[in-house]
Image (cartoon, rainbow, N blue to C red; front, top):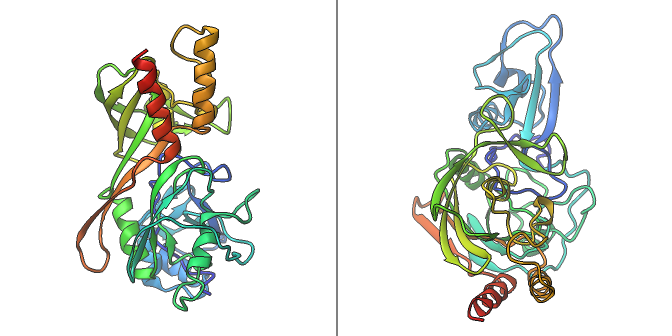
Length: 353
């Protein structure tokens, strides 16, 4: 296993993260502090001499994708390391401190060939093993699926999931089955050429019915488990979400969201920012009655809706990318899961009362 292989990853993560994820969506795998007597040296040469089994070409690819940081900022491979510089290699998942256990967990595979696998993740399934979730994850399921494939090592960061979605978000994810596929797909995510569309149930009806939400997203200063929108400046990272009303009900709406960027919890934070939190999003205040007269009958209806869809009503519906080997443009769509479908049906019935 290439424990010290540097890989290209997707620094522009999906709108949300697993409960055990880092703030930025990236994880430090290696850190080096240059000596006081360090002579000026290109960062790619600096790292190759310190990372086992890592080629200069792969370090350069990692730098191109924003995965090499010096003093906390992404640098290109020609950056010259100076005395006392702090050099980090970051990746899109935490370091596995143990071998990933293969577990027979059902997978809804939408597409698979020799290079890629597209899976429709159910709500409730954590993506990566980590603190508090050492097994029972999507990666454990992939380990089982690939257990008879000698070319796929689930512990090897050069292959595997290229991006991720939150535990309680359902929908499409792409898995790279080879290092070349992951390098290529990672570049596509980094360059924002992939297509990602989500469906979300939100409180209220957005006005206007379609629009562009722009606002830096960073860790909340009041609650570290939340992200927040900050005025333009040094706080947070640039984030843009496009939304469009699909269907309006009495006190909630179904909206389509398209990511221009992909910050942590982006859709959930941006929709709350414009006054329309996701339905039953406990982390961002959507798990209480936010619209409508709170009569006993209405509150009972809402409680029933919360039970029908016991998580934030968010689904990664569409995923598009260029196939890393053939160059063919590929699009995949995953129908709404049963819980969100049932939720919509209840609101449609409520509308007719």
